[in-house]
Each structure stands twice: as structure tokens, then as C-alpha cells.
Length: 133
Image (cartoon, rainbow, N blue to C red; front, side, top):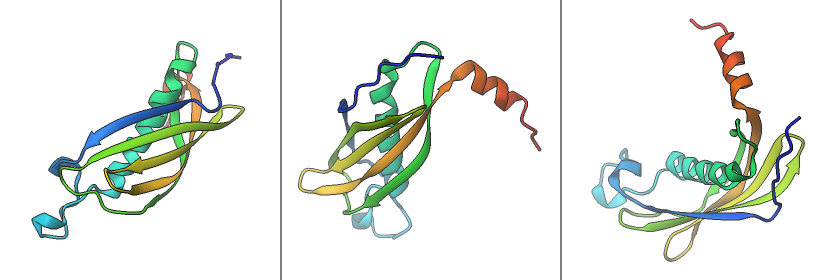
């Protein structure tokens, strides 16, 4: 069994400039283009992965298993969004994070995210045996 050195309370921060590539487009008006919820959640997940990855033994990584996030406010094109992730719990192979997203004026997202620690080689082997259409 692998012995990972995961530190409760460890934090990571990442910034994102909101561009048209990460905005919703379905409202029609150019002034209504804001950071999409899927992109916000994706940045939160990636930030959590990058926070815990250096603490894992070689050959291990994490996969997202649970997301409980509220999108509180809109961030327009040109805004700089800061994503924070804090490790709040470790249970067996599960790592739980508190996540937040802030633009220059307010909190735009918050919640929790859980990731499972996996042995990459074993996971890849298991996926190769899974039936496909």
C-alpha cells in the first residue's frame, strides 16, 4: 500500500483571465458573456488536483468523484478570477477540498470537491478491460 504525505490545510491558488473561450455564448448579447459554470468547476477541479499531486507517491494521481459547488456571481470577459483549494480531509483514498473562486470584487463560487487517489497503471489496465461499443 502506498504511503502518501497529504497535508491537511495545504492550499493552492491559481488565476484565470476570463476570455471568450471560457464564457457562455447562449445569451446572445456580447455584454452578457461571462465565465461559464462548467469552466469554473473545471478550474476548481484542476486546482485541487495540482494541489495534491506533489504529495502523492510516483505512479499515483487523482480523479474527481464529487463536486458540490455554487456559482454565486458572474465574472465578465476581462475579469481575473482567483481559484483557491484547501485540503480539509483525507479518508482512505479520498481527499476532500474546500474550493472558492473570486473575481476582483466578490466571491463568484464556493463549495467542496472530492478526489480519489488512484494507481495510474492499475487504473489504465482496468479501463482497458472495460467493454466498449
